[in-house]
Image: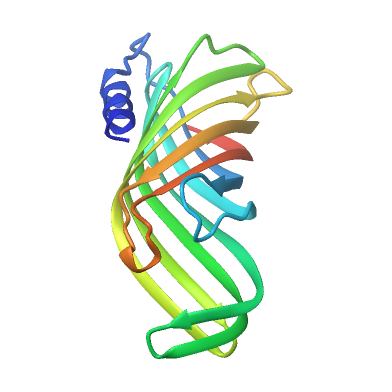
Length: 202
């Protein structure tokens, strides 16, 4: 995973402007759908995530900004008996991983056209995580913070040239260093897609 972080940071720092003309700013809101990749604690697909962000173009094809996202991955385990050091309990159980990344972002647009503008984005920052177990009337929960990096590829789609509104479609990979040893969770990795809209202004 260190290679992924290193590559993303190199990409982040290596993004360059193709022109010197400053552009507009924009805000966007995305619906996030995805699933964890690397753990057996909470493996379920989630379609209730999202993100909101802001970009400002420092030249024609390159923007910097910030974003905050959220997602809650969960798994349901049917009724079974769990053995502990003090005894045993028979119950069904829900497990959850809640992820809240807070990032600075850099976006490079490539061959932007009138209708479709492909881009590469890298976000880096902190991720607040919660890991929870709900069984019978009981709840166990841990919380933690970690470093996160999120590379993303996507495109903005406009149906009218020059429109302030556009649709967003992208795929992203999230890696975070959050750990919860009690649940054998050494990091958080997810793969997801975003569908949303953006609005640009001067």
